[in-house]
Image (tube, rainbow, N blue to C red; front, side):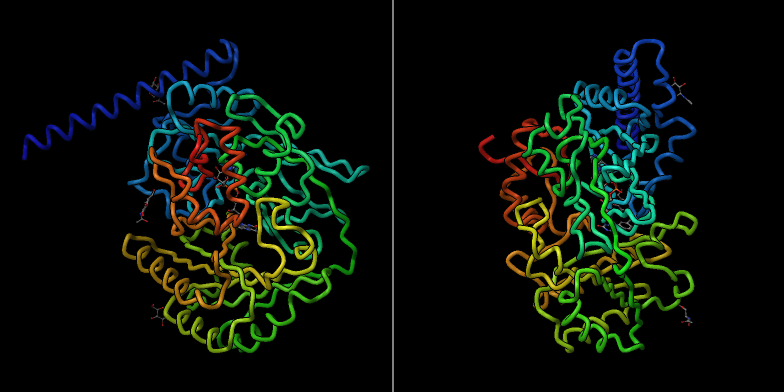
Length: 462
Ligand SMILES: Cc1cc2nc3c(=O)[nH]c(=O)nc-3n(C[C@H](O)[C@H](O)[C@H](O)COP(=O)(O)OP(=O)(O)OC[C@H]3O[C@@H](n4cnc5c(N)ncnc54)[C@H](O)[C@@H]3O)c2cc1C
Ligand SMILES: *[C@@H]1O[C@H](CO)[C@@H](O)[C@H](O)[C@H]1NC(C)=O
Ligand SMILES: *[C@@H]1O[C@H](CO)[C@@H](O)[C@H](O)[C@H]1NC(C)=O
Ligand SMILES: *[C@@H]1O[C@H](CO)[C@@H](O)[C@H](O)[C@H]1NC(C)=O
C-alpha cells in the first residue's frame, strides 16, 4: 500500500515536471517567435497564473465540462494579433502539443476548451474587429452586429464571435428567406496548418467550401469572415410560439408541422414546447437565449437534434410529452425549413439538410445542480427520448446539425482515427458531403494536426 502511494506520488511529480517543462519551453518558443520587445507575457497564462482559472471559466457555456477531473490546458493564450496565433500554431507543432481554439465557448460538448492529451488553449477573446461597409452591403466580422435594414442571417445569439458558429453553418430566423449564415459568406481569412494567413483566393475553393459548414476546427483557425449583408423588408416576420404541455401542445404542433414550411419565405414561425416545472421563473426567454445570458448563472445541459420529413402523428407527440413529464427542465425547439432552403443544393456547402425537411428539431434538457448521478440521469433521459423518436424523424442517415454537437453519435479515437469509423457520425452531420470534407482535410492538413473528437478524418489512402 505504502509502495503504491510512493509510486503514485512519483508519477504525479513526474507529470508535474513534464507539464512544467513544457510550459517553460513553450513560452520560450513563443518569445523566440516575437523577439524580446513584444508583450507576449501578457497573452500567455500558465496554469499557476492567478488569471488562469478565471480565463478558463469565463467563456464556456456548459459548466458540465469544467470540474476537478477536467484535464486543463497547459497554457491559455489570448492573442491580440494574428502573428501571435501563428506563433502558437508553430510552437504547438514543434513540441507535439495540440491546439484548441475558442471563440465564445458555445460548443455543446466543450470541444473548444477540453482535451485529453496536453494542449494549448487559444482563446480569441481579444480579437474583435468589425468593418461594416454599407455601400457595397458587406461586412468583415468577428461579431455579427445588426442595424436597422441590414441584417445578417445568423443565429439568434446577439453577441456571437462567429468563429465556430459560422463554420458550423449557423441559422436563425432569416433561414427561410436567406438560408444559413454560411450561405452568405463571401470570403474568409484563415491561418492554415503551416501558419500562413490565407484568404479565399489563396486557400482555394475546396477549403473555402469546407470551412462554410464543415467545422473550422478541422482545417485551421478562422480569423474573420466577409459576409453579405441582406436587406430585410419590413414584412419579414419571425415569431415564436411557446407552449407548455397543459396548453394544448399536441394540437399546436400537429397543425403547425403541416403548414410552417409551406408559408411564404418572409414568415418564420418557431415553436417551443417546454416543461420547466419548478424552473419556470428562471426561463422566461428563449431557452437558447437563457443559456446565453451571462447575467444568469449557466445551466448544465445536454442537447440533441433531428430533422423531420413527415409530420409526426398525434400519438407520437403524446409519447414525447409523457417523457417530458418525467423531467424538470426540458425543451423542444422546432424551426421550420422550406423557402430558400429548398432552392440550395445539398452539396452547395457541407450542410446537406436542405430540400425535403419540414423542420429542425432540437431537444434540450437542463439542470441546476450537477453531480455524476444527476448528469447520468438527465443524459440517460435524453438518450431514451432520442431512441423513442427514431421512427418519426429522418433516416438513412438519421440527420443532425453540427452546431448542436452530440458526441453520443460517435467520436474519433486519439491515436487511431479511422475514416470508416468516423463515417458513422460524419454522414449524420454531412451526408454525401462527408467524403469531400475528408478529401479537403487530407489535402490541407495531411498530418492531422487540427483534430478533435469529431474532426474530419483523413481519407484512408493518405
Ligand atoms: C446559447 C446558445 C445559443 C445558440 N444559438 C444558435 C442559433 O441560434 N443558431 C445556430 O445555428 N446555432 C446556435 N447555437 C449553437 C452554436 O452555433 C454552436 O455551439 C457553435 O459551435 C458555437 O460556436 P462558438 O465559436 O461560439 O463556440 P466555441 O465553443 O468557441 O467553438 C465551437 C467549435 O468551433 C471551433 N472554433 C471556434 N473558433 C474557431 C475559429 N476561429 N477557427 C476555427 N475553429 C474555431 C472550436 O474549436 C470548436 O470546435 C447556440 C449555442 C448556444 C450555447
Ligand atoms: C509560475 O511558474 C513559473 C515556473 O516555476 C514561474 O516562473 C512563475 O513565476 C510562476 N507564476 C506565478 C504567478 O506563480
Ligand atoms: C467533469 O468533466 C469531465 C470532462 O471534463 C466529464 O467527463 C465529467 O462527466 C464531469 N463530471 C461531472 C460530474 O459532470
Ligand atoms: C418544486 O420541486 C419540489 C421538489 O422537487 C417539490 O416538492 C415542489 O412541490 C415543486 N414546486 C412546484 C411549484 O412545482
